Length: 230
Ligand code: SAM
Image 1: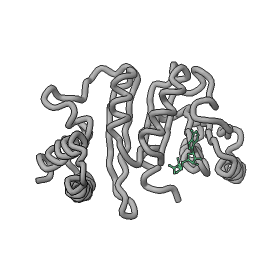
Image 2: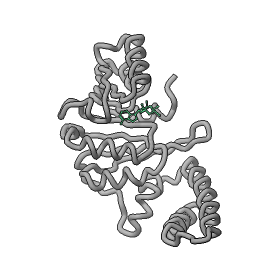
Image 3: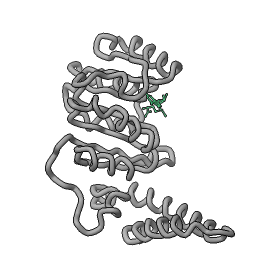
Image 4: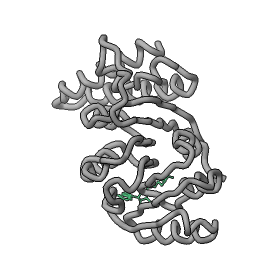
């Protein structure tokens, strides 16, 4: 049974997807997609031997070896230019995901849609998309076993700017779509973050040489959160 987190990632792939899942671990996501759509094809990329072998085993056991290729390598090194049309990268920090995208940029020519599920720091990816010709077209946030996960979907060269003119930094931090939807998991996520930030700022202020720049940055973030959830 695939986690809800990965089911949401899968739901943003089109029918007949031809995608690469980077950091695929057991290749559960590509297997799920290909089992539900007999015209879908995928490449599962893994940098580590253990997960690479698990992915190979899972694909073989599911009888999907003709439609899912498991390849070993770092980030986008496992794909050729124009080989896939969509990309999924889930379950890592946003900084690692952004590094994978940045280092593999020239492989993205044929990639129309990128779906990412960063565990933390989604702002890093919203900025990466903005600076690299991918436009955020959808966002989701879900809670699973006490953790909150954000899913971001970006299309190459889409033309509907999701950001308002007022406070772009705030929208980059909270997510323009998520901010507008203001769903229950969104409120819960930011309530948790608010408590964490309040604690961190309190501790930073007590330091013998407080880092005022960081304190100001966190205080600004806290204000954004409070503007939304009170
Ligand atoms: N994507 C799956 C999910 O969301 O459940 C697995 C997430 S798991 C926490 C992260 C996986 O990414 C690990 O299997 C790890 O080996 C792989 N990984 C980390 N850095 C990578 C990189 N630069 N290139 C390819 N895979 C990587």
